[in-house]
Amino acid sequence: KELRSELGAVREEGERAKEELERTRKSVDEVQGEVERLEGRVREQEAALQRERSLAEQSLEQRVAGVEKEWSLRVQAMEAEKSKIEEELRTKQAELQRSKAREEEARGDAMKL
Image (cartoon, rainbow, N blue to C red):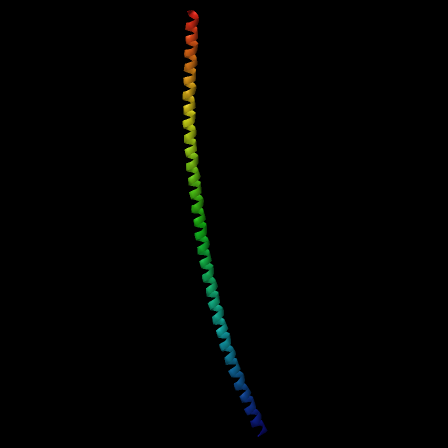
């Protein structure tokens, strides 16, 4: 009779242990599912961050290219203006030389008189 009682107690303990094991497995499965969901969210965030970083780099590159083009056009305009001024200077220097030559010629003619 005592052995049957002990056997019944052992069986009950075994059943409780099985139930506890099942609850633990379910809990582990739930936690594992949450971990997998969070890992997925992390991967999504990393991908979104990479896309944003790439867009920011492209935007920055485009802005730099725009500034470079703007300054290139400004430099070209200034170089064109410089060339124009240099040409005007050469023209005025040539006029001055001709005027001086005419003045010398006129002096020479005046001296002859």
